[in-house]
Image 1: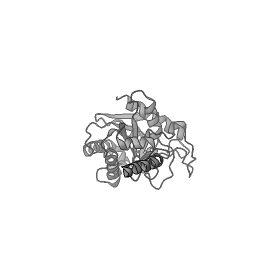
Image 2: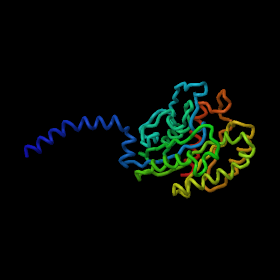
Image 3: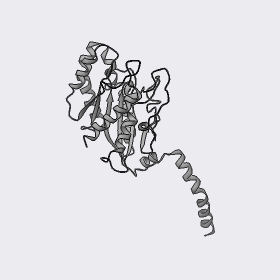
Length: 274
C-alpha cells in the first residue's frame, strides 16, 4: 500500500509536466488526428509551382506576408516531409516543392474557407497533403514516376491511422505543357489516365478531383492546354478557372491575393459537391 501511495504521488507530480510536454510537441489538431477523436478530411495538393505557392516569392525571396486567410489554425494540419501531421503554416510546401523559393499557395485559404462553412462537421480537422513540384509537365506525374510514387506514399501515410477520409485531389498543373504543341495536344488523354491511375491505386474509384484551369503558361500553347483541360470528361472531375486572377511580375505565378481568391474558389467547388 505504501508503495502504491508513493507511485500515485509521483504520478501526480509528473503528470502535469507530461501534459505540458505533449501540448508543446503535438498541436491540438495533430493530437486529435493522432488519437482519432475528430474526423480528418484529407486533401492531396499536387501539380506545379502555382499549387506549390509562389505568392509574394517571385522576387528571389519570400516577402513573409501571411494574409489572415492563410494563418495557422489547430484544425488545419499538413503532412510534413517526414510523414507526420503538424500544424500547417505558410509556405505550405516547405520541404516538398524542392529547390524553389516558396510563398503563399491556395491550400491554406482553401482550408480556412472550408472551416467557415457550416457544411462540415463542427469539429472536423483538415489534413493537407502537399505534393506539388514546380516546373513539372504532366508526363512527370504519370504512373511509375518518382513524383507519382511520392504522392501515393504521402497520401497513404495520411490515411494510415484509419481515421482519415480522403476527400479530394486538388490539381493545378499544365504550365510546362504549353511549351510544346505535342504536349498540349496530348494533355487531355494524359490527365484522364492520371486520374484513373490515382483512383485505382488509392482504392478510391469516385475520388473527387478539382483541376485548375491555367492562368498562365511557360510557352505559347496556353489556350491549347486550357481547351484540353476543359475536355476532361471523367465523372467527379470539377474545373475551376484561374484565368483573370492577378499575376506577378514574372508573368507566370499568381500573386498572394490571387492565391487567396483561388483557395476560396476551390473551396466553393468542393462544397458544391457535398
